[in-house]
Structures are given as structure tokens and as C-alpha cells.
Image (cartoon, rainbow, N blue to C red; front, side, top):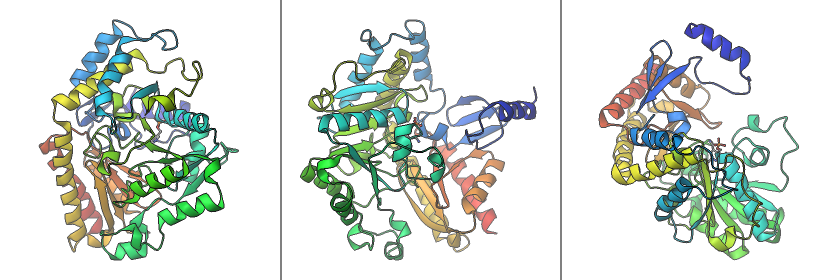
Length: 433
Ligand code: PMP
């Protein structure tokens, strides 16, 4: 079948609700590149939406998965432990952002991990309500649809959704006139929109602390716009949680596993989560997610209340062990910080350049979780995205504001980063012209 026929077949027989960036068919992926049926090759700055963080088909991960397929594919964790599952726990333990995080539960997807965290928080506290951030994305299952506040499309016409979910503003400072005027040097204390005050008011007006089990936060807002919070924000949320006996759940599904230049984004602020969710980069593309918490909290749930047929699949766990080893062997975090600095410098250069500065509203992000927000009203993000694609590069938009996000492989080479920077720069300049 020709590429056009394959795409037509897919459009006919695959649910329309699955959106798609390009009407093409991916044949293979290697490192920072994907090759389409028909031979077109793209430099991939999406890596499966921040999943194949070590590049497509990382050799050591592939080898570990292949070896495991020959030994055991499905053991079922409700029947017995399985070796790769335990080895993965052993690999993850020293990587955790706080030593209290010592007890794991593995699931398949990010949304399931978030729901597992909701179950744990409700069960452990015997409280029902949860608080989420405006702009947050936690998934598309019934529970997580209620928690996702990045775009209405995820929940519209699917209600009623899970009750007991309240939301509060996340400090998205580039949207605030006062902080924009300070050109990036914002602090929420000066913000007309103080998010800590808003959280305190929410706990007074709508969901009393005695009804509130947990606050769920992405340490860097992901689908909502790649927004890191101001310096002291997460520590202040921790204080509120401690004061009111509310659990702090950090959703690291997108920001975890090196994406921001530290193993987990929460390490940038030194704050202790009560529960942390992980997925995406954990197994470089094999379906796997996890929650971690402290033992006395996790063990409030009785045997049998957690689990699922495919939870913690043996092949995915073996891939996860290889991912953890690659982080140790291949100086991944050093590369994230070096390449991230190059990409950010290029984007900031475009922001300063009189030819293009009028197009940019904000450049932000940490490590290789970077975003360019464009001046509103001109659909610049999708225009630049299309130009990048013409030039052989895949990039993604994010958030309801006109924003492009850049999430290349964490081990991208300096040459491929230089090539990516050149394409983005040219694309923006051509749109400006
Ligand atoms: N939480 C966050 C922060 C995410 O970015 C995502 C996925 N984009 C999810 C949860 C849901 O993960 P999944 O798509 O694997 O269900």
C-alpha cells in the first residue's frame, strides 16, 4: 500500500478521537530520528511526547527487553514476585528524590498511576477531596479527566466525572501583567494573582482541610505550557500540606527521568513529596508507570486492593532496569544540561533579535523541557511547527496559549542539537519575514 493509502486506511478505521500530528506512518526510530514509510526522515524533538527519552530503540534497552522476552513475558504480579520487577525497585530506590520514598507500585500508564495515587491518598487519609492545578494534565481516564484542567476537549461531553476535585491557579507568571513587565524576573510574592493566597482561600471557601486528602501538582506544568513555578512556590505548598495534614502528590510523569536536568524535577526545589507518580521515560517506550510513597502510607491499603492484569509487566520492568543503568553509564544528565543550555540560548537569542522579538512572549523551561510562547492572536506556534516539519523536524505545541515545546532525546548529540536549533531558528525567521 502507498503511504497515502495507508494513511487513508488509518483515518477510516482508527477512532477520530485519537488526534494526529502528521498523516504519515512511522516505520522505524533510531536515536533522535524517526523514518516514515516511504523513506522521509525526521529529526524528532517530540520523542513520543517525552517517552523515548534515551532515543528511539536505545541499544541497551532493546537488548534487555529482547532477553526478557525469551525468559518471561507475563508473570502476573498478583501471583508471585518477578525478578525484573524487584530489580527495577532496586534500581529506582537510590534515584528517589527523598529517602522516605521507599515503597513502589507499578502500573501501565501515567493516568493509571495518578489514579492509584488518588486511591492511596483517599484511603490513607480517609478524606475524599483532592486539589489540582489549573492548566494541569493528569490523563484521560475517568478519574484523571476530572483532574485534567489544561483543555476542555479532554472532559467535554463525557461527564459526570469523578466528584471531589477542586482546582486552583498554578503560578503561570508570563500570563500576569506585573511579572511580564519584569521580563522573566518574576516572584509570585509580587504577583497580583498570588497562587498561595488562592490555595489558602480555596481551603477556607470550598474544600476544608478536614475533607481534603491531597494536592496534586506537576512540578513543571507539562501539557499546560511547560511552566516551571517560581522559586519558593512548591516549598510553600508543602508547608500548607504539613499544616493541614494534606498529602502532597507530585506528578513526575512528564518531568521525571532526567527531562529537566535532574533525575526528578522536584529536586530543583528540594521539596519532599508524600507520593510521586512516574511513567513515560521510566522504560523508554515500554508501557510502565509507578507510584512511590513511604511504607507506612502505602501499606494502609489491604492486599488485593491494588494490581491489574498487566501491572508491572516483566518486559517493561527489564527495560526500566536498563534505563536506570543507562543514566549511570552514559552521563545523561550532563548532556541534558549542556544541550538544554544550547537550545535555550538559541531561543533567547531569537527573543532578543529585533527581527523576531515581536513574535515571542516568553522563553522558559528547565533542562530539555523547554518552551517558546508566542505573542497571541497570530497562530505562530502552528505556523512554526509546520515550517519545522517541511524542514524535516517534528515539534509539538502545548497549552491553550500559543506555545511550542521542545522535548528532544536526553542523549541528543551536539551535532543534532545544532541542526535542530538551526531549523527552529530558520522556521521562526521565515515566519517573521
Ligand atoms: N501526568 C502527566 C504530567 C502527563 O504529562 C501525562 C501524559 N501526558 C499523564 C499524567 C498521563 O499519562 P498517560 O498518557 O500515560 O496516561
